[in-house]
Length: 235
View 1 (cartoon, rainbow, N blue to C red):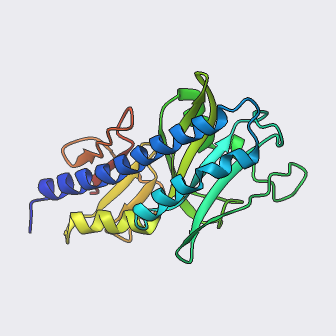
View 2: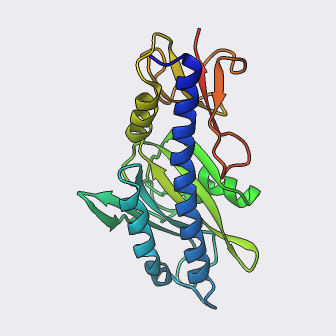
């Protein structure tokens, strides 16, 4: 069995590679969306051109990315106040998933108020959000969302995003960590548990305890300004 330090390092590097791969794909989607939105009067149909890009991302990520697309800032499109152009992997195929964007509806999906949308627009940088329950989203399930701003004439026009599979992240974490006597949790910068090797720490709950020291390792995702997640040994 490898030492705890080696196991934490290997798991951290593996997770960082997964995240950087997602953000590299989002950079490509953002560039394609910027091109589509550069039209003088972009519309919802304009964003249909992004389907091949999203299909390539979802299928190439082999289960890590469950869905992806582009969400537009209010008032930009000629034929809709807001628009959430989103595709999901369903039955092995990438299909468009309609969302309820009617403000008068009880099931209104107001993506403009969500952290994964507001964060990249405010900072101009990629962001990783979750885990959270995406109520009103594609399937009302717990997800982690990676998001990146889309610029039009130097200003934020939309957000390119991808929902990541919690199961896939957990399997990647456990595979690299290996069998350990110690309880190890993967947590976000706000202390939410993403995955762990112990029933003590359920995904989505808050990790209570010190987060710094020799028994913690940051996930060095190059695409993000600071390490978004941390591997930490409990107890």
